[in-house]
Image (cartoon, rainbow, N blue to C red; front, side, top):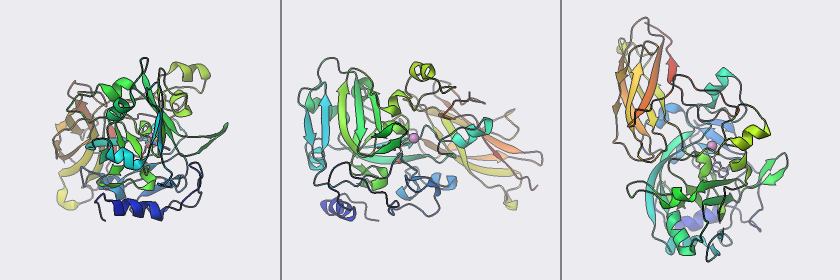
Length: 394
Ligand SMILES: Nc1nc2c(c(=O)[nH]1)N[C@H]1C(S)=C(S)[C@@H](COP(=O)(O)O)O[C@H]1N2
Ligand SMILES: [Mo]
């Protein structure tokens, strides 16, 4: 695949997408082929929801497009670049509409690496406690990519913030069908997350490229936000509008969804805070179980995600072959980077009694994955110790 970002590939991307007349016209044809591996576990074709097989996640620290999960609440909106603009409104001095060319040319472009993960990752394990609705994600709703575009802080400086600006809303060009009618997907983040980034940390980005190529339709072409450290739902694809406000967005995906509640009651929804930072996690993606040559020793590989809090990093990953009584350390394959996962490998001693292997990660502040997590209605943020059962052939 050609990974260079040039005018030709942008035009090509635009030309292969059927043109549409107004920014809100959708098509409901099957999802076009966007370079996904045939081996993806397809939860739904339209809207497209798919995750890779876990063994592919540990092949590369940067997840290639073909193994990158897709989570969409609505069909992909077909966007005509000739008509596309990003509208910026609210508590700003100079409201404006920027074309993609202006977004690419008027601001310094930055490339960051950040891990994107769905708040519903590992929901299927949550459902083992008690069934929850939602896409039954296994542990593949996560990927690490390079993203490029201007920083949101540069764009906000350009439009001039007014006093009272506290939150930044993102509104998409997709159309999600909900019981009360059709709504755009939306998100909102505190403005401090945009303005207070430490220089060594990746900033919030308006990304037009992923892994060095223009975003594909599935991942938000032509423009999306990337909010490092936050649940994937805050990284809004097909971004059409930014509103600067004194309060969080009233959009359903901020005001109601993406909260931890136990019961479907209005008081619970309104009392809970919208989820922001993702939680510490680790997952076993591959074991050498079943290879007779490895009897006595099991090779294990996986990923670990630091909490999305500034300054946090994964300090260690440990494996247990005796239900959590004793633990041995894993080795990392890459140094730690802010808001990015770490891949790890371990060689675990096993015997005839070994029934399962368990992984758990600990961060630099001593925070570790819980053995159990409290059940919540939507099955978000599942981060209990990860266990894989061994079919014991020894
Ligand atoms: N416009 C829009 N943005 C969206 C979504 C969506 O449905 N519509 N899904 C969100 C969710 S829940 C996640 S986890 C990420 C997934 O991004 P990806 O499909 O590029 O992996 O996109 C987020 N941005
Ligand atoms: Mo998500």
